[in-house]
Length: 185
Image 1 (cartoon, rainbow, N blue to C red):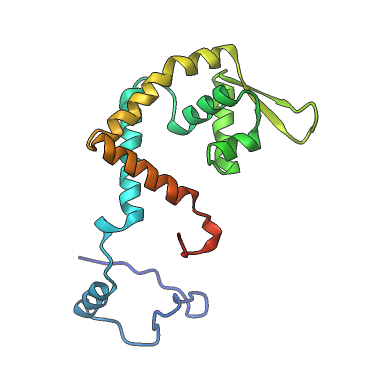
Image 2: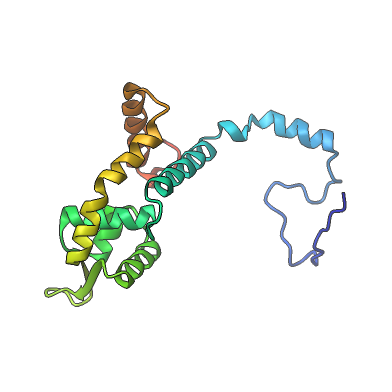
């Protein structure tokens, strides 16, 4: 197998901290020994397992919502507006756990599809207020049960007790303050 390595001048390519860039290269056996010592296993790494579960959830959404020009994040925004009524774009982002860039893209798509309106706030001109159109209200109401079905299909390998436990634990992880480092609870 031929491997290409991009050559960079020593001064422009900083080696990662602790990489021992001044030592001779490790043999494959040494690499595997160091790898084994770390205890790292991709299939058991929480972030990897959660990413795979997210892929499963997205697949279930696509299956149930087949033929719709709609993403899970767009539907989350629609359902949130339906529940809360008119909200600022910033608040909608917080309610749906979307960063400003993502909620901006979601809002643009929903505006383009005529499902929401955006207007300046009557009390604070800096705020963009988002509301469902009549078509957006009907569209969202007509798809709520299908979204619930997405959740049912996603959790179907688990018993009802396991489903409740999984959701409780995921909410506990999500509710943890990310600014506290790795302290946890």
